[in-house]
Every structure is written in C-alpha cells, then in structure tokens.
Image (tube, rainbow, N blue to C red; front, top):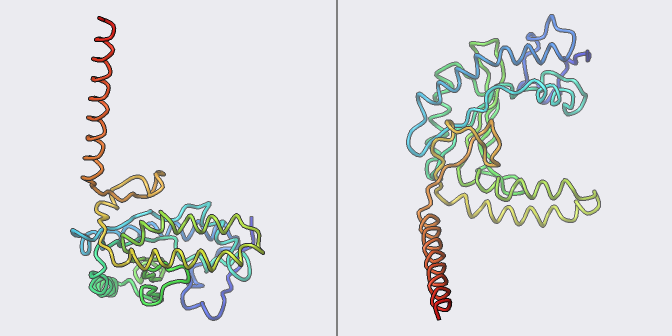
Length: 266
C-alpha cells in the first residue's frame, strides 16, 4: 500500500478534490477506489443531463465512463509536484460535448454553463483555448466541475469541435508521438517546427463544418480501438469511385478473356 498525500499545491487547491473526502483514508489505493465509487453517480447524472438537454442534430456527446482504476492510480502516483497527491485526481467522471459547426460554439458554451449551474454542477475552473489556442494550435473548452449533490466531487467536462477532434487524431497525436521518440537535444529543435505545422492545420480545420453524429452510441474510437467512439461520415464520392474502379476491372477482365478465347480458336 502507498501512503496517501492529502496536500495540494496552494495555487490549485480550489480546483482539486475537497480534503474532507479523505478524512478516514490512509493509503492511496483506497483513496482512488473511494473517488471512483463516488464518481459513478456523478457520471450518470452528467451524461443524462447532456443527452436530455443538449444533444440534437449537429451536437453529439462522448461518454467514456468513469476513469479506470489502473489509470487513476497511475495518474495519482505521478501527480505534478509531490507524488501521491490524491486531490489532484480530478477527472474520475468526465464527458465531452461535440459540435459540428464552428458557428455553434458560443451558443453551446452558454447553454452548457446554464445547464450545469441549474443542476448543481458548479463550474470551478474554465479554460477556453478557442480564444487562445495551445502552442500546437489545439483548442477546446475545458471545465472542472463540482457535483454539489455528491460530496462536492470534482470532475471534467470538455466542449470539442468535430473537425478539430478529427485533425487531432489525423495529425495532432502523430506529431506528439514523433516528439516523444526524439532525444532531448533534437526535440527542442523539432518542436517549434512541428507546432507550426499542426497550428496551420488546426487553424484551417477550425473553420470547417464536419459531422460527428452518433459519437456517444459508437463502440470504437478514432483509432479503431474499443471503448471510445468514432466519427461516422458518409462519403458518396468514395463509394462512387469504388464502384467505378470495380466496373473497370470487370470490363478489363472480360475483354482479356474474349481475346484469349479468340486466339485459342485460331
């Protein structure tokens, strides 16, 4: 068992799990289990609110479920600053709202805030990187929320744009993976160039309308792995191209057979 650390970084205490949640807990493993048990009801309540009030054509959602135990324990052990600071584990329950049209952003942001406040999810932290994107160009809205009906448990809610999410899977993660494999002296040189590349892409796609319908109902994620979701998009062009290619192949085969038969008869 790992000894629990109930301290917090003073600048971030207001955004972390309340100290009173861990009054009778002495080890980190039990602390993580306690948070995950509490998180189940907050997760269900949050998803029900989103589905009942926000989801409509052009707006979907992603429900990853509560954080897994192994992942939560690993994150708690690797907390920033001093290890084993259980209070920094603030994403045990989480969800994403995903919108298609960039013109929807302001309305969704406002409606989400209203919905949370009216249903006793208090917003304790907000970062809108659509206004000020990250160095690599990535952008979303990230809320830390406190469930006032469940021991003030802190969780996380994101608002994501579909086209940005797609580009992250297509390019953003790849750039991250490249940087991760580079030695430190090369990484410092390569990072600004990769950031410029991804920033250009994010700036472009953030102006596009992409459809992310049914995200919450899917069973695979962008990478094709179970447990997340995928973007479903109908592409008529692709299907037409495939059918054209097939028909050309068939006609080529037929003509070859005919010529072979004629030469054989001769």
